[in-house]
Image (cartoon, rainbow, N blue to C red; front, side, top):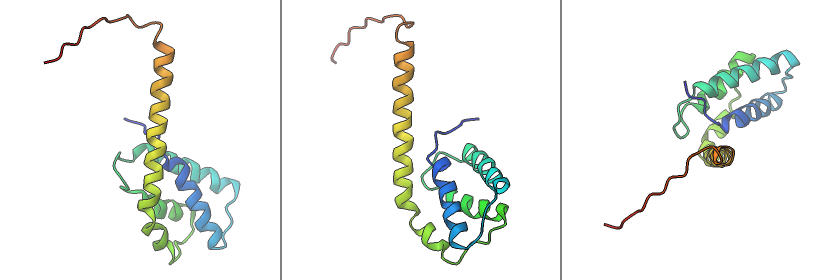
Length: 120
């Protein structure tokens, strides 16, 4: 199992809260906990491809919470490609930070390798 450092873990709850507030619904603490757990499971299971199933995840999370998807949800889905660019950027930046942190943490314990690179 591979756990992605997913921007969707941040994006999907914000979208769900936006849609529920626009529909006039109120989520209690119990539904917020269910939403967080559902989003966690969905983003762990998400494939590492662009856009992918994220519009489906939004509709699924709304259905689990008992909030009917509004007719204007197509506007959110249509703008998904813009949001995907920001999500991919946050994933790449997160990967870079983790790689730099691990290198800094482990650099003292790794053996030095002296390799001469010859041009062909």
